[in-house]
Image (cartoon, rainbow, N blue to C red; front, side, top):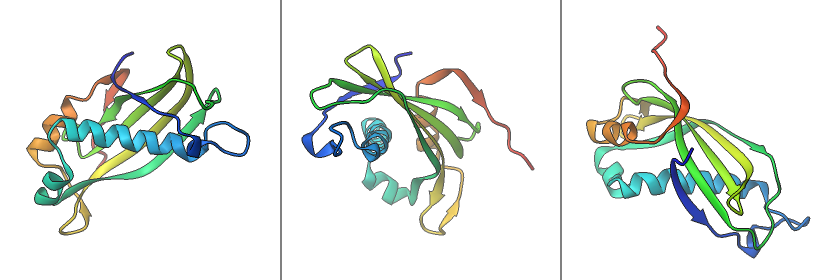
Length: 148
């Protein structure tokens, strides 16, 4: 799977006392990927502010597979793994690869959209829905029906 991908830099300040990547950096890279994807699709912070909508997370989990050290070349992929058809709730997966061939971690997030004016979960505007529909999807992507 290729997905939406970017190279990221391992900085010295990202290291922990054991000389490998601090656990929180993996989460930072996931957030960077999600927001960069939105930005490149025209959903800028200013647009979100104008629409009074923003993403929120219910759950964020990382499974660590191989350590990353200073000097490793790292890329991060982004995929949608499931979503409601109206894009109001969704899950994404980030694969973190080192040196082009070693899967080092998988970050999974479950999220939704909040109307920042009324501070409640809501269905996003059409512009956001269309951008989310364009997200690369995992091989086992699933549409989730609303449980009532």
